[in-house]
Amino acid sequence: MKKIQNIQISGRHDKDILADLFFEENGTKKEVVLFCHGYKGYKDWGAWNLVAEEFARQGFFFVKMNFSHNGGTIDQPIDFPDLEAFGENNFIKELDDLETVMDWLSAGDSYDQEMDLNQLALIGHSRGGGIVLLKAHEDNRVKKVVTWAGVSDFASRFPEGEVLAQWEKAGVAYVHNGRTKQEMPHYFQFFTTFKENEERLTIKTAVSSLKIPFLIVHGDQDETVGMAEAQSLKSWNDTAALRIIAGANHTFGSSQPWNENTLPKHLKTAVEETLDFIRA
Image (cartoon, rainbow, N blue to C red; front, side):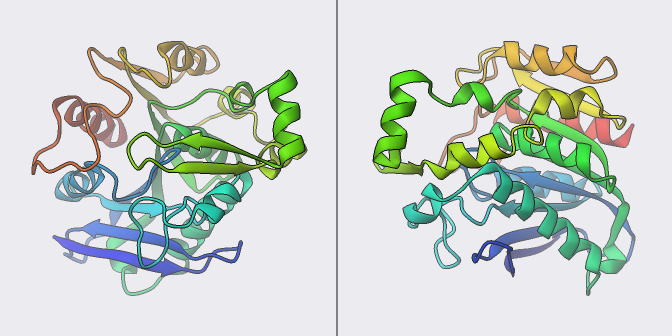
């Protein structure tokens, strides 16, 4: 299996994007699957490398990426050494990053004989699920889209009232990362950029008009993005497929670090459901 990791792709917002490629190098064009991480996530989190290996073994050209402002750096892509970048992140930058990686793949290089970009599927975990749904709606290069524990709405995740006013006055609000013990900043531009682009960033609008195959995978024990969000996504698109994994939490049993060399049970099920869907 060919693994090409930490490829630097020039981004539109003054920071490079890192991407990994996993595939069997055999000169046969393969369907491309592009994976986007979620909030406080990154491409090397938990068992995502094992996911990439499984898709490659099953005959796909698997790509995973770090959003440029996720808090990682080129030299240290794991965890969050660049909190300033994290604070400057927003949904528009993530959409631009995803489009940049799609453009980079489409440009063609030494991997061109291994990729069939006429068959491009997007997978997004958590907040990344919202991003891939928006991109699938606005870019006809996307032929299939899958959410794993995906969010259904961005607007409701912002504070209101006095909390919002305090955020605006201070210019920054902090979120505690229980694992790394960091206080992670969100500058107020995160909210203003959302409001300026709210129509484009409304997931319901995107999902309601999707004409491509759409799979929703969700755990019924998701402690972060509740089952109601999966049900909302399904209610907005009658043709969407909904797969509920009994007992699965938000990360389908994976954690950071993941020191096993096999997928956790529920994540394995998510992968299998997704493989079956994409093949169909």
